[in-house]
Length: 118
Image 1 (tube, rainbow, N blue to C red):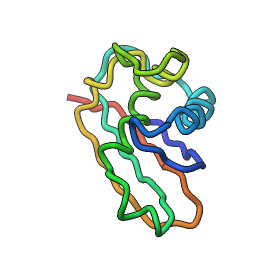
Image 2 (image 1 turned 135 degrees about the horizontal axis):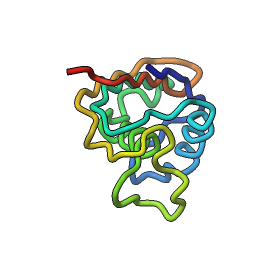
Image 3 (image 1 turned 90 degrees about the vertical axis):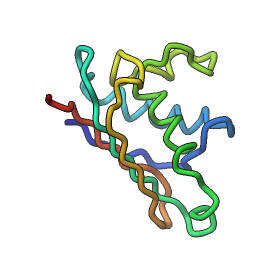
Image 4 (image 1 turned 60 degrees about the vertical axis):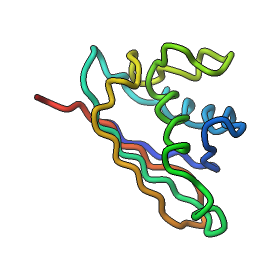
């Protein structure tokens, strides 16, 4: 099980999310990597200021996080260091995804990753 928090403004996919992804990567490199091709359960809680809470789609917020944690086959960024920072396989190995957003004055995300045992 791996848990960590990233402080900063969560950015949705395709909306200038590179700085947000760099913040995620900076936290990921402090953590152990998940070894081998295993099924994952990922829970992400996004903390957003009141004015952004109802304007942010959870599915679009999740993509930059997953693409930074997992190694995507076709990364949509020239900076290849922004992918595969905890898990060396594609995010198609995420079998359970739990997303939530909460109002907070301090923006960021809490990320929980664990292996699903069959």
